[in-house]
Image: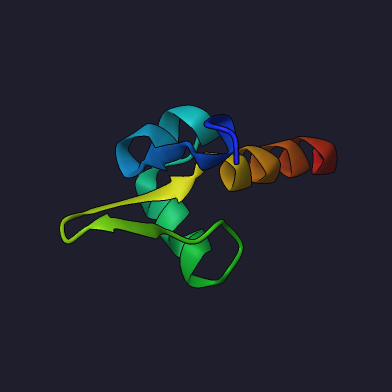
Length: 63
Protein backbone atom coordinates (compact mmCIF):
# COMPACT_ATOMS: atom_id res chain seq x y z
CA UNK A 1 0.00 0.00 0.00
CA UNK A 2 1.43 3.36 -0.94
CA UNK A 3 1.77 6.23 1.52
CA UNK A 4 -0.93 8.23 -0.27
CA UNK A 5 -3.59 5.54 0.12
CA UNK A 6 -2.89 5.35 3.86
CA UNK A 7 -3.11 9.08 4.46
CA UNK A 8 -5.66 10.09 7.06
CA UNK A 9 -7.46 13.40 7.27
CA UNK A 10 -7.85 14.50 10.85
CA UNK A 11 -11.31 15.81 11.69
CA UNK A 12 -10.15 19.42 11.82
CA UNK A 13 -8.91 19.09 8.21
CA UNK A 14 -12.24 17.87 6.82
CA UNK A 15 -13.96 21.29 6.56
CA UNK A 16 -11.07 22.58 4.44
CA UNK A 17 -11.10 19.50 2.21
CA UNK A 18 -14.87 19.19 1.80
CA UNK A 19 -16.18 22.72 2.30
CA UNK A 20 -18.62 21.37 4.90
CA UNK A 21 -18.86 22.11 8.61
CA UNK A 22 -17.94 19.40 11.11
CA UNK A 23 -21.59 19.27 12.19
CA UNK A 24 -22.70 18.53 8.63
CA UNK A 25 -19.97 15.90 8.27
CA UNK A 26 -21.08 14.22 11.51
CA UNK A 27 -24.69 14.19 10.31
CA UNK A 28 -23.67 12.65 6.99
CA UNK A 29 -21.57 10.02 8.77
CA UNK A 30 -24.50 9.17 11.02
CA UNK A 31 -26.69 8.44 7.98
CA UNK A 32 -23.88 6.59 6.17
CA UNK A 33 -23.52 9.26 3.48
CA UNK A 34 -19.89 10.16 4.30
CA UNK A 35 -16.83 7.95 4.80
CA UNK A 36 -16.68 6.57 8.35
CA UNK A 37 -14.21 7.63 11.00
CA UNK A 38 -11.10 5.61 11.78
CA UNK A 39 -9.95 5.39 15.41
CA UNK A 40 -6.29 6.49 15.49
CA UNK A 41 -5.81 6.40 19.27
CA UNK A 42 -8.10 6.68 22.30
CA UNK A 43 -8.61 10.41 21.79
CA UNK A 44 -8.08 10.82 18.06
CA UNK A 45 -10.09 9.94 14.99
CA UNK A 46 -9.84 10.73 11.30
CA UNK A 47 -11.02 9.56 7.90
CA UNK A 48 -9.11 7.78 5.16
CA UNK A 49 -8.05 10.44 2.67
CA UNK A 50 -8.68 8.17 -0.30
CA UNK A 51 -12.30 7.61 0.78
CA UNK A 52 -12.90 11.32 1.44
CA UNK A 53 -11.27 12.35 -1.86
CA UNK A 54 -13.45 9.84 -3.73
CA UNK A 55 -16.53 11.17 -1.92
CA UNK A 56 -15.64 14.78 -2.83
CA UNK A 57 -15.15 13.81 -6.49
CA UNK A 58 -18.50 12.01 -6.57
CA UNK A 59 -20.21 15.14 -5.19
CA UNK A 60 -18.66 17.25 -7.95
CA UNK A 61 -20.16 14.93 -10.57
CA UNK A 62 -23.61 15.23 -9.01
CA UNK A 63 -23.48 19.03 -9.04
